[in-house]
Length: 297
Image (cartoon, rainbow, N blue to C red; front, top):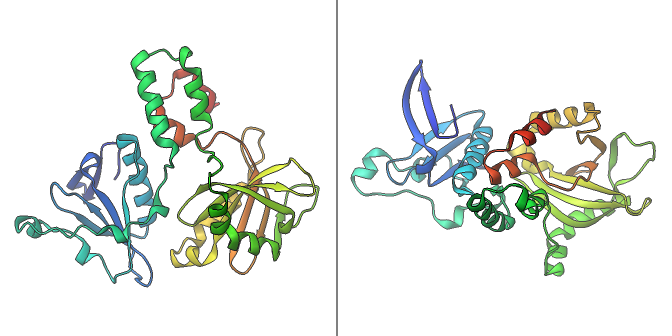
């Protein structure tokens, strides 16, 4: 069980161990070629917790998000291709012998990060707001929060182009259309990447423009098939697709197009500037009552 304070290992109705989130120093998880679904919670002040679960990725994701609410920073995640995490888990016996098995920096996977470079600026803004306690006088800070999840255009455009060349080429080669909600048909090659606006474990999200309708912007989630298969996430992706297919509400973002080729799946939705709700909750800690009512409605 995971709360906003700790991770609990509960067996037969009793708590075997409680790890406070504030004591967590990082997370490790196995990756292919390992077939194990192991993860380790590193607790430098005590000893580590190693576990195996079919819901490993969901557990790790929740811990990362709770960690952010406490530290306003990403929880370090180490991806290890060993058979298991035995050699990367500090046991109680190891602690008594002053042995640390904490992974080295080479194993840290920045792709696991949730927060981007905007976090430090937002943290500064939140500190200023807490000092004044005046919600109305800090409208500018709120505006910054509403645009936090949209990445600024990089200073080095050539670097971005280099990183995304493979995706652009894949799109140009075309893909099979699986779904089209719009009455205006479109092909994958009709969409042009403007910039990357987010990234996750299984792919990236791009701001794209429909060339046949200039000015029409979409958010394109580009998912690599090989990573999905390796992490056994096909069911989750299918569920996400089905939910986005079904949604039809003016206040919710739904699916507009779906394409796939040999290497990737592309989800296209209307672009809504502002970022995800969770990011804003992380920054303000708690919504004002009128804000909570608005989102709940």
